[in-house]
Image 1 (cartoon, rainbow over the protein chains, first blue to last red):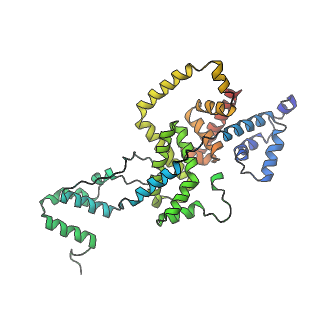
Image 2 (image 1 turned 30 degrees about the horizontal axis):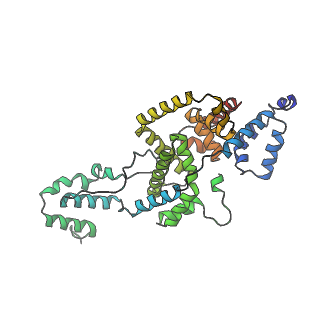
Image 3 (image 1 turned 180 degrees about the vertical axis):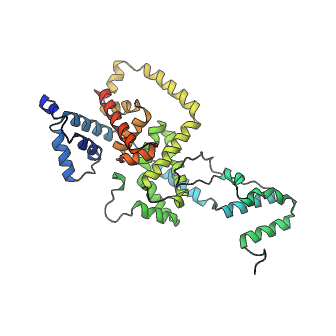
Amino acid sequence: MSDEMNDQTNAPDCGAVRELIPSFVGNTLSAGERDVVESHVRVCAECDSELALAHILFASRPRVPAGLLGRIERAAATDRRAPARTWWGVSAAAIAALALGIGITSDRTPQATLEVPGYAYEAEEGEIWVSDDGLVAGAPALDDLSDEALLQFLDELTTGAGGGGA
Amino acid sequence: MRDEDRQGAEPSDLELVERGRSGEDAALSALAKRHHAAAYRVALSFVREDDLAQDVVQDAFVKAFRALAGFRADASFRTWLLTITANEAKGALRRQGRRKETALEEAEEVRSDEGGPAHDAVLQDESARARKMLEQLPEKQRLSVTLRIDEGLSFKEIGEVIGSSEGAARVNYFHGIRRLRELMA
């Protein structure tokens, strides 16, 4: 680049142009904005160099593995087929498992602890047993009930029947 | 927002989210198709290992779809997904901490043997060289450059994904670009 070009480095619109460079290489600028960038880099070696680097980086974006999308779709579909995880459903399932002496099993791989944003939430299967849900917390007290009484209790939970209804 | 530049009557992310909440599998598939590439590149920027990056992206989508009910439209779906992806990647790195450290040590050893003319010839490919240099940047600079150049995110969105302020994201990006230019010179 010539000295004349470098003399333009501190032109007041360098900052604005540099903000536009990523969108320029991503081809998301308007025609007018593209003109601004193209005009500027013709006389600014610094921004021209930065634009060249951005072009190189954008052109070398890592390739996405061909099978990844299918893998995501399969995993998501499998997860959606899993039983619903409403607290009600989880509680009923947990009580049933306790009462009948069977464990809840899953063919899904263990999930990582999720640090999701505050607006996302996570319901891990492992949390079924440590939920502060009163029904689950009280589950051990059901040990003293007969199978018949437990089944009746479950029926009342799932149908809403009994319990002093009007 | 190049991933969200849609032509014609393609549904917006928000429309797909709403349909996904209603149990429409096709809507969730469309979201995955639209954003899996960005999620993969973000994951790869963190974990730097293809297999692990794919695991991270898969888990991130499953968790995002599971949590759709809690998604609020005050952030874009893409930013929200990439934030979950970033957190998944951090978790994966923590779980594999010891193994990762070992792998990096081994990689360093290999790199130290790669100073000869043959290696230099390979690096004449500017794209490969740029990516190699990118790997040498501190994490937040590397991520800021990746998210800005590769995915076209705004500095505000980058800040949300990497857990910093908009201003810090901007500083990290420009420091990263400056450092890259020095390394590439």
